[in-house]
Image 1: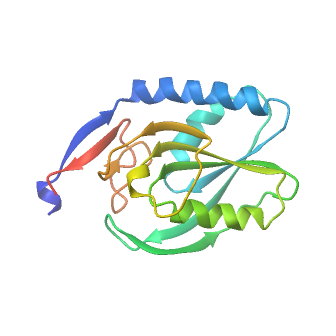
Image 2 (image 1 turned 30 degrees about the horizontal axis):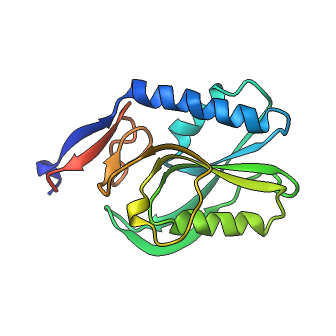
Length: 176
């Protein structure tokens, strides 16, 4: 029951900010002269993408893609569907897919396959959180923020039934 749930802090806003600065340095090194398209996966990546993009001191384009894989609650449906395509052209572009979390890999694999069909110059994955213990599809995370345990996490854009996205840090739901 939701009333019994409590949040246990996993990463503070300062830890997240420090790691984002490190990720931005890696991306700058690799893309400073390429004008990449940063493609955020909605809704969860919006906070991460905003903070990451402000740390990049070279031209980038921002856009979003929206897919659905969770019917409700904490368990993926296993089916991924495209809800909204990016407006930006993908063809010939260096695309950095920005994910809040890579869990089973189903969503990321679906989006990567869809992107590759659009003829990009390259596609790389930047994920704030990686939960490899739940992987069902092989997904390579090129820029990884943190590895997280097999627990449901919220905050910093990640939600549970649209709650907790606004939290400044990342917490584990405990007491399910």
